[in-house]
Image 1 (tube, rainbow, N blue to C red):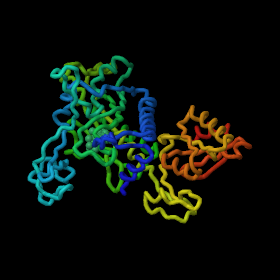
Image 2: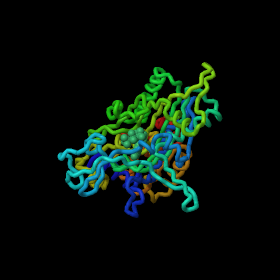
Image 3: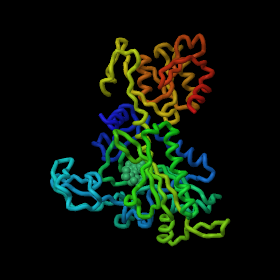
Image 4: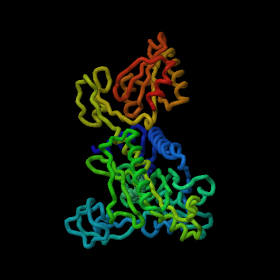
Length: 465
Ligand code: ATP
């Protein structure tokens, strides 16, 4: 099984991600986040917001509408150019992006060596453009409905509000606007689990600077580094990350520079986030199409100009997926007689005590982990243990996401929390009743220590920072 399949299987089994509309046979390119997945995503988005809006005095937030005036998409160029060239196999009618079959955009005829991955034939249509924008209609009266689009990127919601933000806040150049929200694309070939979906979430910064090429490139370098450091600070392994510069022929026509932050899995580098120098393209186009003045008046220099824009544009779902892949670890438990044969047998291999001998553990950064701590009474049928454990649970949940489990033996409960990525497990046993302390077990080291009940909050707060 490759890493995408392993994560998809764990995600479904443990409630991170389910296929969208599954009981109706699914809807390609859509996914539903389950109880663990929604926590992971919320944590990711909170970390993004904290690093951008909370920690930078000159960055503010925004939440623009998903459905915008159709003119926005004319101005942004999406209706004209937001399209992938694709070819169709004449035999089985499967469609592929030209880059998927390894030809350049409009190359035709297509070499006979290139075969259809579905049916093996080698008879192709000429490449054609296919627009990725998802159409929708607003209004109540048939025939008078307005055709518009679900946004293909969250970016434009920020730029159309450039004046509003300036007029309603005290921001001065350079300043940024951060936004997190859903975007929709009619992807021709959704796949790779959540990697390429038709509905997904983006987290972005649009940073406005003076239109000075040299200075703006310095700002570009600053944000490149910030964004890469952000992934590393949340535990992503450095060796799995790199920058990939867009070659001249890959650059959007308006872009002055662009780098992707890529993640490596299964020996392949995949885009996770883009850092783009957009020049003054967006503001210029909105000024042209809306006839509104989008210029900035610089109090210091008494100049009026259209600022340049540096953008960081990441996918929340892609980041969540790559954090899961990065954290996913299969481990044999020391001193056990069993080898880890493969993913499924790990689940089934038990020693003579009925305890699994190997484990799957998600070594997620504690700030991203869905639950920070799990609380167990050693035995569910001993009311005195349950009472103390419940009290600890109720006390801790005011500050942390806490999981409760009183089923099966402790070994199995540890395994279940390992798979959910819970950094700490607390067990209340008979000694707890005498000594007012509990066992805390560390997810990664599997070491256990005794901690006083009264010190639990401080202990966790320190470890989770
Ligand atoms: P790709 O080349 O993979 O299609 P892109 O270059 O079109 O991506 P951008 O338009 O720069 O992507 O979007 C910024 C980010 O949004 C991407 O880096 C990615 O994390 C995320 N993203 C884009 N398209 C999708 C999608 N279909 N599903 C999930 N995330 C996506």
